[in-house]
Amino acid sequence: MKRPDQWLASPWRRGITAVLAGALPVFAFPAPSWWWFAYIALVPWILLARSAPTGRRAAFDGWLGGLGFMLAVHHWLLPSLHVFTVVIAALLGALWAPWGWLVRRFLAGVPSAGRVGAALVVLSSGWLVVELARSWQGLGGPWGLLGSSQWQVEPALRLASVGGVWLLSFLVVAVNVAVAVLVAVRESRRPAVAGLLATAAATSAAWVWSPRPDVDGRVRIAVVQPGIVDGLGSPAKRFAREEALTRTLAGQHVNLVVWGESSVGFDLAHRPDLANRIAALSRLTGADILVNVDARRSDRPGIYKSSVLVGPQGPTGDRYDKMRLVPFGEYVPARSLLGWATSVGKAAGENRRRGSEQVVMNVGHGLRIGPMVCFETAFPDMSRHLAQDGAEVLLAQSSTSTFQKSWAPEQHASLAALRAAETGRPMVHATLTGVSAVYGPSGERIGSWLGTDASTTMVYEVPLARGVTPYVRFGDWPVHAALLVLGALCATEGARAIRARRHAPQPHVPPARTVRESPARHGH
Image 1 (spheres, helix red, strand yellow):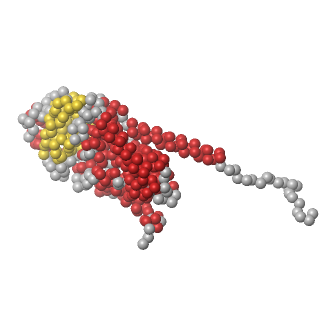
Image 2 (tube, one colour):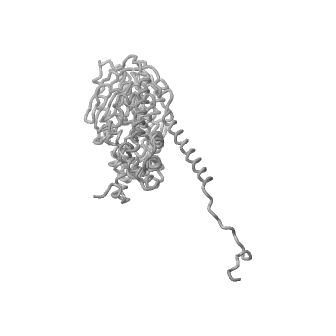
Image 3 (cartoon, one colour):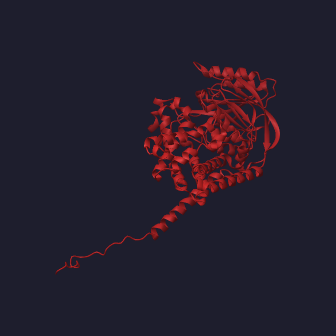
């Protein structure tokens, strides 16, 4: 029977193993939601990279593992983008190549206690910088950040209020590194255990120190989820369904009614009849209604996705135009080069236009709300800025209608728990077709989810909270710390290389001789 190192000697077998190892963390996310699995899911990938015969091979293991990870957490895109999903995963997977190299650099062979300690910090920082790089909206955004797998773990949510999802990712990777050392290197188990204990002590101190949100009142917010409405004339049918559902809220004393993304398929300025019907619903329910218009605007060129607040007298003037669009779904990056994606999948045939700034809206009952649209909930900075600007409730209008039979709706809904915990503000995630969900200011679930088979309304008693979380106050400090760690590493490695070059023995070069200076031959 072949030993593992002999079996992995084949580049093909090793490559396939790297892809599969990188894909393992997907089970920590919804729908499986094995949150505990996140703390060991990276171990096979780490063990593979540390055993690489060369640094170049370790970087290749990092790349292929990154491909597997990105493909797994975005697998629900395959029916829409087909082979282009694999292309995107391969391009973004390259971000993990340096991380794979670092794994071998610090963990190869029998690492000393110092190397193990450094690995806990450096490898976690390296992972965090990878997440930061791919969080750029132009690269697809921060979907599937490792820390977001902890959305239902109360202690983790408390830590998110201190350092956001970034702090959770750092801690999850650090635990994986320590476990990998415990599994693979008997001689280094003591520093690995010490690292785990230090991590536990630091997180416990942060958990005890972090302030809890002060609950200050409650509001009643209704979510309207019409369910699947498609076919010919679907925008008008969807509007009629939403209208009928909203009427059932009469007499329920709600403070706000929220419709999902693309709930209105017509520009309200161009269709005053629809604006009047929504205003009538506002008068009937006694609450403002936040709708989402997905249409070509009459006052400027292009198609926008906009959160529009409608009161008893019609649109109030509060409007938020979506700023961060879904790559390929709502626009095609570098369309002149990548426009062929529309021929192999369901990429956007026309780019939607972006908004320019976030908006905090005042609803009729004195409530200040901060709307976001669709996958903007994956961006921690957007909810943080809304909280800084005075939003008391965060709102997300989403659809996910294209991905009903996948893990995407559950994973999307779970992100709101992280955003609520980070900001200390409750968050409402309202969708057209599920999953709709509401979370309190500590990230705790309020009421029940509306699943993808529901066509109904739900009224939630949403607690309000005062105070400012450390994350809102100090921002993405774990990412900044990670950048400092890697900067210090680069400086140290550079200085070490310079010293090694200076102290390296100079090769012996025999003195040059001219023809006249050539030694005489023996016997002459």
